Image (cartoon, rainbow, N blue to C red; front, side, top):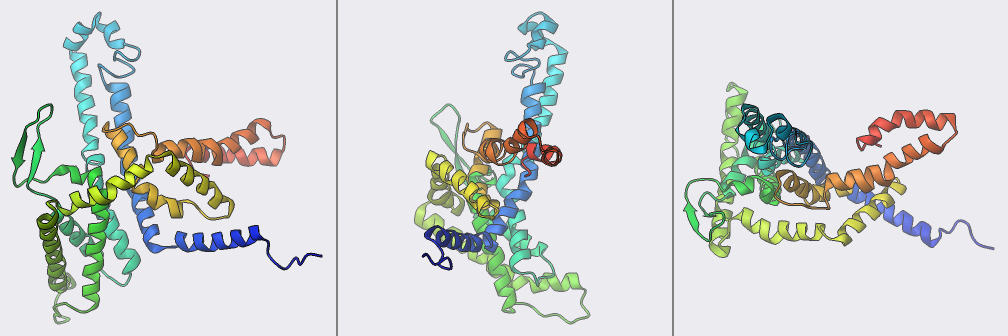
Amino acid sequence: MSNNSTPSGLKKFENGFIRIAGKISGNRLLLTLRDTFVLVAATTMIAGFGIMIQNVIVDPMNGLIFGKQGLQLGRLISGSWAAWQQSGFEHGLQTVANLIALVSNGTLNIFALLLVVIFSWEVSTRFFRDRTEHMTDVLFGLAAFFISIPWNFKYAIPNTKKTINVLNYIDTQYLGTQGVFAAILISGCAVWLYNKLMQRHFTIKLPDSVPPAVAQSFSSLIPGSITLGVFIILTGISTSCTGKTMPALFLSILQAPALAISKTNAFAFVSQFTWSLLQWLGIHPTSIWGAIFGMTWTINDTQNMLGQAHHIFSTLFMNFSTIAAGTFSLSPVLAILIASKRVGARKITKVALLPAIFNIS
């Protein structure tokens, strides 16, 4: 007769898996990364809508409404493509399209810069809650990032083999998707170092009669100077020893390999399989995979929207294929609405339908 009090092998695995996954999902750093990418996603969503409107609706030559790839209303209105290109209507649409395209400059093209601001704030508020002024931490995170970015670089002239030396200008590629890992590592380390120095009282103490804003500025002088000095030294060491600045170094040894792995079928399978497994065991998968997707597939999303690449595996595609619209959200709702005869179940799914369409389940 078997002893029911002894857990089976499957139950032992389940308990062990839940315990380990629970510890990982509760890790403050992972949660900080997850929340950072969730917040910055608002700007990328706005950019995505803008780019869709620009390229699909407004674009006078390549859009689906007026262009050659769709209804071709431009040719129908003017009689020929040559006449359409010379018309004032076409020029007006092109101007509107160019204006809408500016949304990329404030969102996608400065993706890494936005991460610096948000991640600095999240690290400060999560790990150093006793701080009274978290915005100071953001300032030092930004300063450290701009210290590390190359201001002198070689620019390859398109369609030629020539390069020119650009002096005293930021290499803007590291403000976008190429600088994601650098943004996270540099800003996070800067905020951590600055706060540790503050906790050890490397500060200038002023009398209580001094206004708080002035006292805060003076108290940050020494820890802030040390923090920025450290990144000046690190930038010098990186450039001298490797010939690359820190963003370029992080791109080559960390970001590029991570993105290469994320493009494989194996990565996609493991992520989607464990996603459903975690849900089955009652653990929210976003707590673990949110940070990983943010530093891999979200970069792919941004590059797709900018037209820099055509990645199949990306956060948006997987969210609205396998994760949401595929098996975990919309499909069960539709199945119940179509096939179920239970009144209660149908009422619940009617409420759940709209959120499920937008990947909320």
